[in-house]
Image 1 (cartoon, rainbow, N blue to C red):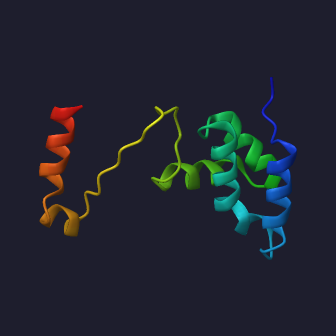
Image 2: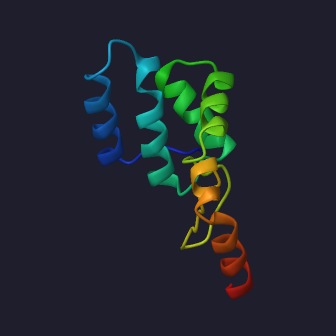
Length: 104
């Protein structure tokens, strides 16, 4: 079964495309729609977005895997993320991570 956006999702995509000078510029918001529609960005979903926006699949794959806000594999109902950048680390992110790991 090939993936396909619902009519509501296609409407959102069409509306987003009107905001950008070319289809490639709409890639990130369309990936959000795909993630919302399919639950995560499977390889099939990435190919669907590439076809929809007339982009090379490699470009879609690079964007989807570079940014941490895109889910490239199924996740549970609840997703817990802890910031690990320098400022968060200085404020004790490791202690929070350790606590969460022990608790869960």
